[in-house]
Length: 254
View 1 (cartoon, helix red, strand yellow):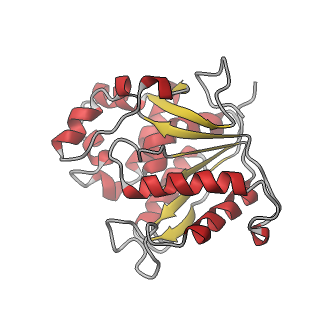
View 2: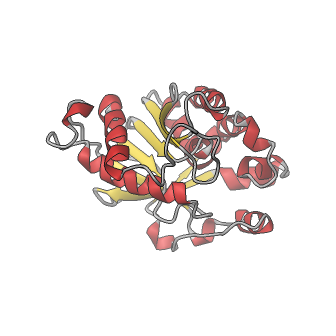
């Protein structure tokens, strides 16, 4: 069965590679259309070229940046409000325009916890994505954002309690939170081992984050290869809409 087209919606440059780089590479390799919307950092910021390089590695097209500011980094988009401060209606409308333009079968993004660390931009992006996926299919909402399009499924990338593994101590070691969901919350676990080298190359494209001591790309870069592979080889998701599909627990389906 062909893999569906995939649109990732993530808060920051590097989230796409760290969280869903494997499935993005998998779907691209299978001939499916893939793309990524990034909620923060401006097109003229220092991280935009790194994002472009990462998406090129993954086969996910060119950056689609909403252009809002990062909650914790004022250089992300100095002329724009932080994502946390932006009017909700406006942010949802910007994302609806990208969904209607790309017309994906499946949208994938953050979970309600904001991944392991609970970053507020991750949580806000999750909320915006929930609203935008529903609104994109309703013609009377955001009529200027293009013809309506309803994705068939929305998945949230997540970390089950049993799957935190090596990441827990690593994050705690740099003073970060470790938030995970009950294993029963996970509906789909994808073994991305065949695409792990591509995923890792995409992570490395975020050179500024690789150079930082507390950023996850930097933490991963200092690990032995076997430990790093263990961390990045599986990607876990929860199917949020229209609900779990029996028998499809090892891949994303429309």
